[in-house]
Image 1 (cartoon, rainbow, N blue to C red):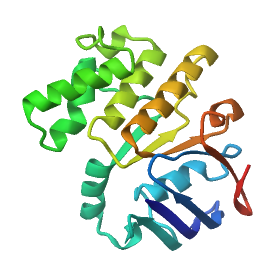
Image 2: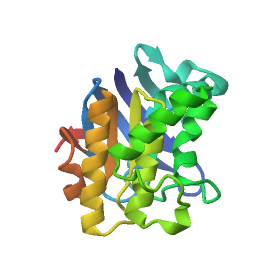
Image 3: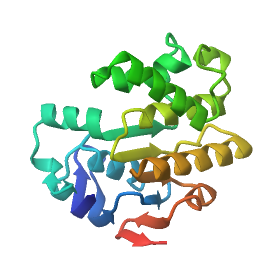
Length: 221
C-alpha cells in the first residue's frame, strides 16, 4: 500500500542539517509498524514525508502506486482528508466540540450523510470504550480519554493509512498501555496500514515490526 523509496531530506540555513538519507520502507494493508529513534533524528520528518505534509529532496513516496511527491498541494490535501488519519501527542481535540462531534468531524468534511455518520460515531466510541462520553466536552476528560477520542476521530472515515506521532508522550504508563492497545486493535480491525513514531521501546512493542532510524538510515530493530 505504501512504499517509501530512497528518501533524502535536508534543511538549510544557519543550522543546515541532513536529516534523512536513503530511507526506504514498504507497508501493506493491515500492517502496523513502529519507527524508533532518539529525539531530533528525523522521525517526525519521515512521518510528514510519508503523509505528504512535506516534500523530500529526492526519493519517492508511493501510495497505492501514486507518487505523492508529484501531486499538487490541493491534491495532497484531498488525499489526506479521504485516505489518512492522524494521532498526535498533543491530542488536537477541539475544545468547543463534544466527544461525538470531534469524532464526527472527518465524516462531515468528507460529506457523510447524517444517519450513517451517527451510526459510525457510535460504533467508534464503543470500540474505544467511550460510549457514555459522547456528550462530554474535552475539558471533562482525562488525557487518556482525550487520546482515545483522537484515535476514534483518526479512524472515523476509514482511512487507508494511519499515522501516530508519539501518541503516548503525555500519558502515564497505564494510560499509555491502554491507548497503544486500542490503537493497534482499531488499525487491525479497519484493515488500515499504521505507522507509529516513538522514542519508547515499550510503545514500539505494540507493533508488528519495529524499525530504528539513525543517521545512516532506517533498519529493522
